[in-house]
Image 1 (tube, rainbow, N blue to C red):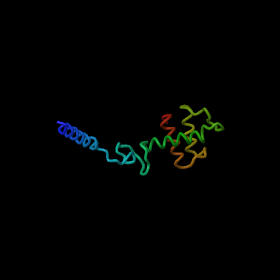
Image 2: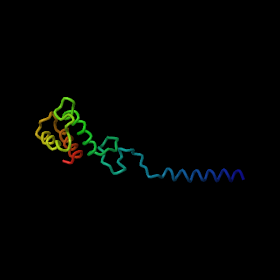
Image 3: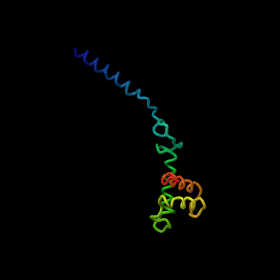
Image 4: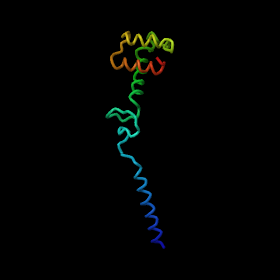
Amino acid sequence: MKRTLISATLLALVASSTVALASGSTGRGTAGNDWGTTVRKGNNSLISNENRLVSQGRAQVRRYITCKSCEYHNKLNRETAPEVAQAVRAGRFEIKGNRRNAVLAYIKKRYGI
C-alpha cells in the first residue's frame, strides 16, 4: 500500500514536471525578441526603437528647448510646436544629427505635427 502511494506520487510529479518544462521558452531572455518587438542587437530591453527615439527626443527638448533659461520655457504646446519644429529643422537650436531627428519624432508624436 505504501509503495503504491509513493509510486503514484512520483509518477504524478514526473508527469507534471515535463509539462512545466515544455512551456515553449527558448531561454533567450528579452534580447531574444520572442514577443515580436523590435529590439536592437545587444540591448536587453522590450522598448521599441520608435519609443526609444521619442524618449531621447523628449530629453533633448527639455535640455535645449524648454530649459529654465530657454526661449520656450513653459511655452511649448500644440500652437507653438510647428514653429519649434521648423526652428529645429533650420538648426536654430544647438541640436546635432540624430538628436535632431529624435526631437522631431518627439514633437510629431506628442503634438501631432
